[in-house]
Image (cartoon, rainbow, N blue to C red):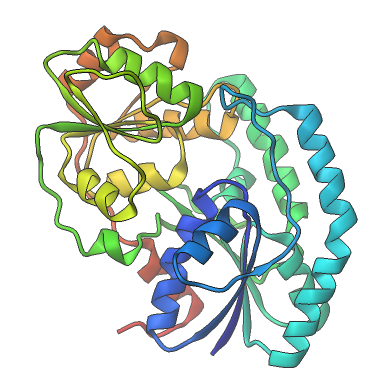
Length: 341
């Protein structure tokens, strides 16, 4: 089967989730043509794939990780001015290669081309979960954010045949989507979890700095930190970015302290690791993820301004659900009607 796959390039989550699908589809003998940009373009290229670079929506972040609305608006204007050229590129390649199926991870241009050519398109993302209202356990501002995001999502992608939501948390059935578990890459699936003596830390920029500052004052715990290298501390080992080493450290840790990205939380839950989620300030989607971690009993969340050494110690002394989840890749393939052995 010939499959065209459009992937939102903003951040690492979309690309990381999509690689889990891509590597399985390729292993099953399908031909997959990729379209993406920015972070996902670099991630996929570094993983040995050859994606086509297209225009896409991006966010400009401040030093603390919060979104800069003015610069983001300029980037959106740039996307609008460049989108026609990318649409023409995707359409011409599709006319030449005649794909059987389009997949999209929150990437609208491939979905638009699929609609114009009358080719089946399926969405695989986590954003469509907002088409279902957030429950009363969420504060009112997040409920409002969820409603607005749901309206935006329904108009962002042009008429996919079905929407599959891949998330780490329990997700209600909805007429808007079919929920599956988070998508795991093969390097994650091949590892056997164990419980070592270290706590895995992952966060970047200012958030990473503030987490390691608090962790350095928890002398009875040992931390392995990725994403930010702070001042030397007897109980913290800083490690450079390495997907293989990171996966091994995740599988063997006793607990995780991290920002609120969907994919890492999903991988930690796949291994049954408790989490303390510290969302990036003013990134509401990360706040939603953090509260889902608490709601599902797999950990807790803490705003960065409330993070203290005592808060980390209380988390490490807590009891949380360690039940493992399935690999959502198998569930997606079943929904697509693709035999996977």
